Image 1 (cartoon, rainbow, N blue to C red):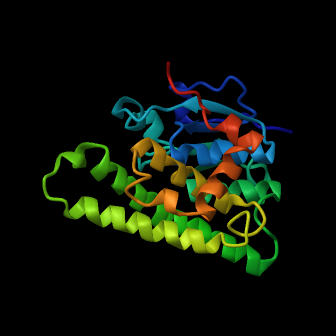
Image 2 (tube, rainbow, N blue to C red):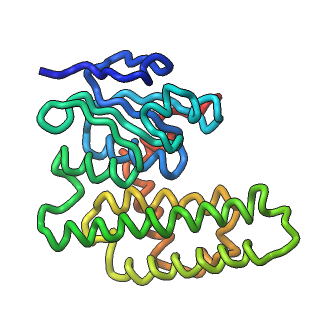
Length: 233
């Protein structure tokens, strides 16, 4: 029998359907990883918009779920053995959802660990390096006169894109078959458009990566999830 969610976060973000998995997120590259996974996997869930403002992510209610004050986070009232589970860190959530549903993460040990390897490549490489690129190319760091940091992250983004370009040679998806690795990686490549950084990192000189991103965003579940929870008007 489904169990209702119980957690201090519901004081700020009440659950209208407390028997469903609860998603607390914002549609950034890290946030949409999870809404994409939930849509692709066909799971029932309720999405709550947690803005990036301190009033939300540093509120006592959100910190009770994620002490690292970052989106996304989930509560599944029907977790392993029917026991509620609370999770933050998008990579951990993707693995959990894949295992819960048996989808997009192979049960073959070799393929499974290779998929997790590429997921970790995004978590430790693509996301942090592209995030720093955005800071030093588009946001506050762009005002710095010393180009050292900006050049470092431009060059690192180029290197990462070339790793992906080689990996995607002869493949539609990172693992051949569509997986949670793609749900993690493609949104972070797509953010280069928002940063206005495609030209500077040589994006248009690539063949496989742009085609990969186009395939990814043509998926109906991805198109739907890309604005879940909806951005404020």
